[in-house]
Image 1: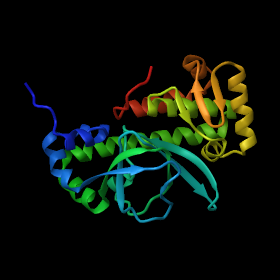
Image 2 (image 1 turned 135 degrees about the horizontal axis):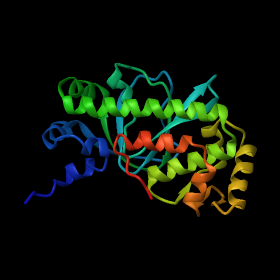
Image 3 (image 1 turned 90 degrees about the vertical axis):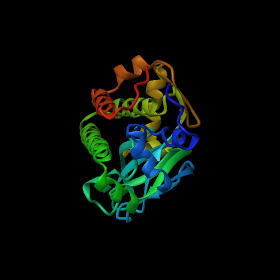
Length: 243
């Protein structure tokens, strides 16, 4: 009979990438891993910042924003317990390419970037996990870019809400009009109109930033096909589905 994982190991196993590593290889990383709390709205990095820390979320959610001219933004990905912030170190990058904003408060495992580079160089299992994850992130970012160019806002909002639902494993979460406007690259009035349309169809309830998805299947039907593509890309790295 297998012994239960020690509390410190179980704590970091809340992240699915870390949990995918062989126990002995995760144990070797434990001294370099810190358990940290992150708060809603915290900016963990900006484009061009040196990559100093890597975050492996447990129950928090981090939004990855592409930034143009310092003010125009578009969400190109989300990082929950299925992933990590700072995955591009696996590709040899030393600076961040996105703005990372905490969308939902919670905990994460954090490691110094230099430590992760050292472990990555000698750990084939970690290499496989991170290469697969960076490939998934790229696939999602490409699809979101296509979606933002060709699909109507109502369908894009439905897609974004469903992806958030999958990451959080909950039909209820909090997203302000301002955050959604930044994520979708539109004005707040556009978010208001799109959310109102979804609400009128009985798909969601949206009040003061509190969102409840009432009809997941109906919302999926209202979303563009990009949702299924993004979901499948996430499933490829072990992201749990939320029925």
